[in-house]
Length: 251
Image (tube, rainbow, N blue to C red; front, side):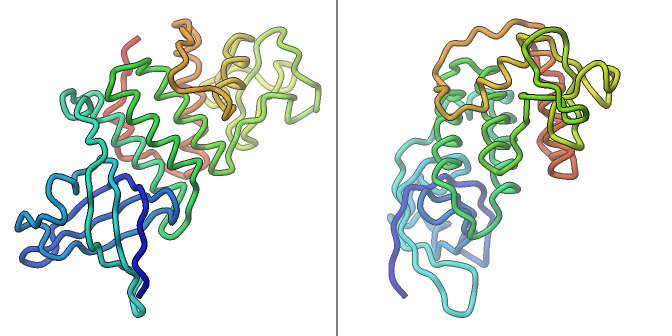
């Protein structure tokens, strides 16, 4: 079959047979794919130092007529994001980002926006740039790209527009805010002050660069963590395996 080439991020690898590797990767053009790299565990020159989780690579592959698996023909390393591998906390965050990507975009579902977001986020945390901000921007933006953006424009119950005055509540079932007149603050409906609501709106925007030094306030970080975790768990229907390694996140 026709050979294809794309930039990709390695999401995971697993030994396959005596010398092969089973590889899951998220490509910029073709989305989430899985394939077999023949002879990769024998230090083949076609794959040397490139098939490592989180690595950004140029990959060449061919489809198979009778299977969803592809054949990997070659792979060249672009960036191994070495900073991630030097710190367990960063490794946990990268694992979390990869897990969200794989759930939101299952096999054969493509999104160039998601690829660029994941690439930028891994680069930022590898360089130890705005780690907390990067993690939350990634969470909010990934959910928005996946079709699960949080509506902060109005109360989902009474429809009253939010004008940035007073606290608002996040209501996970509706993926929206509700006003204090329609519900009360609790663990199930975490509250946000006006600055937190404003920041939440900002970080969902594709116009905001991950390299922006936003300087989130500590109370904003604390409120956003609760809101984003509640939103992700409700939308995905479960707590991500890697999420336990992120708690508690230091301020």
